[in-house]
Image (tube, rainbow, N blue to C red):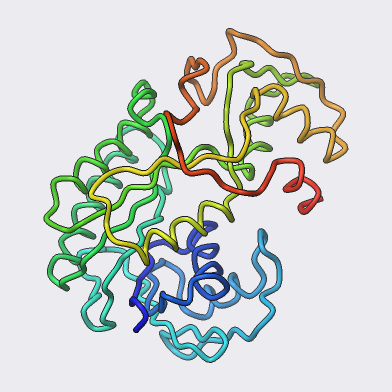
Length: 288
């Protein structure tokens, strides 16, 4: 019998996890998602996703239900996770991939602490047996950032909860490289720190989250990274070249990464991380 899973958050990763469940994880049955948008909007977004493109099967909506290839999925559209009725759909596992809408220091920690505490309470009331959460490699090394302090607070809440859990810390996504370049642009130059990274495709992250959801809880943290390390300036340079962007990349050891001083250990995993399979060069070809 398939494990019944719910997803909290239906953005880039939530939709990719859904795709991974339907295409690659027969041991999972997706029974519910929670997102602020309604079933009709989420069905439209999933059917024509900006990352994985047009869904090859059928997608529709009826009331508070999204229907994918004939499978009915409850859409809660609940702003307060404490009110989520996971028991009504028989969810055994919940995958939390919701992200904060506002990264200002106070707003972001309020979001992750409040939503995290309320989501875990709703899961405990429903008898959920495995909480899977997405976090970020280097979270405890980047605490000058309010965002990472908030992610660490979220992790602490998970570890203190009675619910068995697995935290998946992933490196930066390939999909964020354009944003990194934009933030570091001065005129026609892009100044970035030449630090080591090991970024990963969002698709690979979603596949691992689905695999973790069908597996036994680790009651610990799994680190996840892309298949190969690369320096940030080279990463951005390859992205700009592939997209026909004439900006010049300048490696600058004093440049900041989202306002943070970083080094070769800041954004890279520790020993023996789980690795994705999609190389950056192949991802670039796929997304041109």
